[in-house]
Amino acid sequence: MVAYFQLQPAESELQRLAEQYWQRSGEKEHELEKAAFEAGEAIRSGDYSLANLEVIVRWKSERAVQYLIGNSDEQVRHVLAVAAAPESTTEAAVKALLELHGVDISVASAILAAIYPERYTVLDYRVLEAVGYARHDVHFYEEYLAFCKRLADSNIIKPQSELPGPTPLRTLDRALWEWSRSHGE
Image (cartoon, rainbow, N blue to C red; front, top):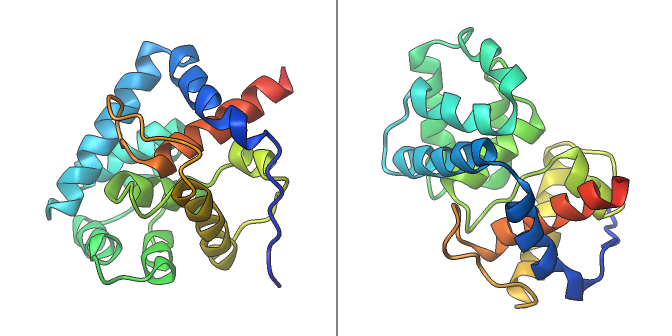
């Protein structure tokens, strides 16, 4: 089954929505996101610690952090090594992360986006709403990621170079999330 994505906001709105996302989110959200991308950079550099993983998971889902303690340091190191390996496929990276307690597909996508913001984006209910979809598994994430990469590569949005994860994919994620938030109000 192939997923079909229908972008809900106009392409011309995406950059404005991404800017609005950052302006409307509070200082706590800014700090959590900045810390998550710093932790992702540390993981990319080989620091596969539970502390780095926790920072990223806290950014995505405060509720999921409590489940991380069920994972051994060895398991965390192994899984993060697979996820951060440049040669890992999306499927291999996501499946490795899903082995951890407290990590579902949304959290796994956030971990990958923090480690490699130029390769991955976050999958959550708000962005799914913004692309007219609600189902998600590993293959769905791969299709969603390909859709987002096509949008990001089309140059309709620019990286927010002064913000954490300064890539077109992260800018698009902010825009889609903001569209969903403002659409629901």
